[in-house]
Image (tube, rainbow, N blue to C red; front, side, top):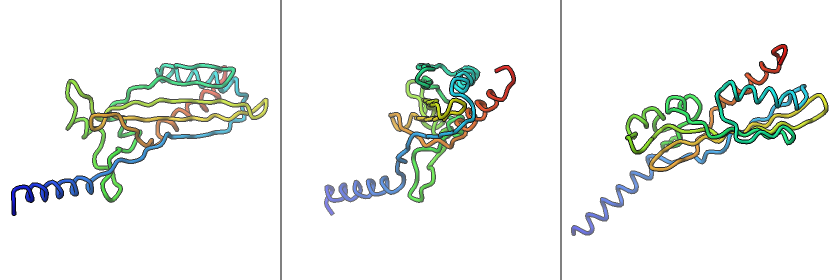
Length: 174
């Protein structure tokens, strides 16, 4: 076998091995809608209080249109494990690593890995004078393989924020 043929065989085997071991998940934004028997203006005020209590920075606050957007909030690799599924999966569809393990193996001073961020958007719309709908969209990303990729949320942070909103609405004097 010639050297050229041997190199092509090795290259082909390497490509086949790499392509069959993992694939990237086609992540989508997390979306949740809830109906509340509370006026939209009161819900919007409570939502602002919840975002402030979580030390998140708001980029858009428009009570008249019901839009509240939170700036991308940095998230550690350990928290990414709590809130998202790792974006690379094996041929069986299982994550190939965790964010924390990936960060430990790939982070350097110049190049972060495994950590990420979440961008939150809320829309509060009036259903009736005494009720409204709250739409939550969360876009999660992580630093992976020299780039930023989207991740699928587990819904943990989102559920916590909705629970905090409901608690805020039930708190007397709020």
